[in-house]
Length: 225
Image 1 (tube, rainbow, N blue to C red):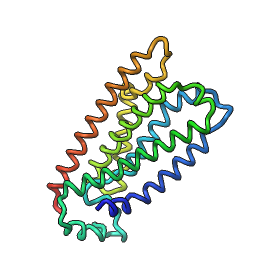
Image 2 (cartoon, rainbow, N blue to C red):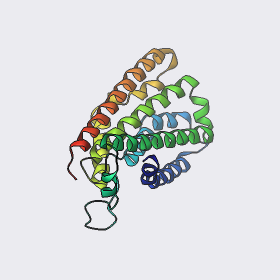
Image 3 (tube, one colour):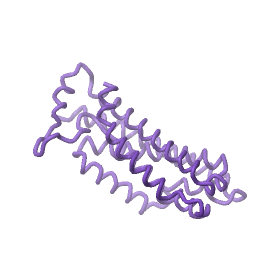
Image 4 (cartoon, helix red, strand yellow):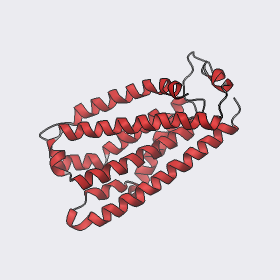
């Protein structure tokens, strides 16, 4: 089951690797000052990282697009339903593979930025880097869980659109949801506030992700195929 889940997510992983590589090549510029990187780290890049989670998400038995136009179910779905395995385990295995792939890809992208941008290395302390990685990790998991729940209700295309819409509404209507922004406040003024913001925001994101994983399991267990 783990291998099959990997086969189903691998092309999504290739797609997002290409997208992330393009973004890294586009943004890396030795002449860009740290102030520009600070705006990117707070604003644009978290959305990119959340997109990794959204695209790589899969839940239950409907994570693949049908192979032929007009075909409601993917051809492997009946085979999956016949396996001697609970739907709960199917969901959890698929979500574990996708979530792990999302996090690894995000970490590699952050490492690429760090290695290729001297201004970023000079402007971010070790503590800020650690807090940012923690914040982005929980953000990616929350975005992934949102998309996973929607994939149990919608087909793959609408799942992605709906998850992006939820993300845009949260980021746009609730500026406080960008809890990682506190990391880049002035060290002499906001170090304690940054730590508190990351702790509270990361805990909230983790709880949201856990609750949505539970919800996706419940939906798939009750769904009629």
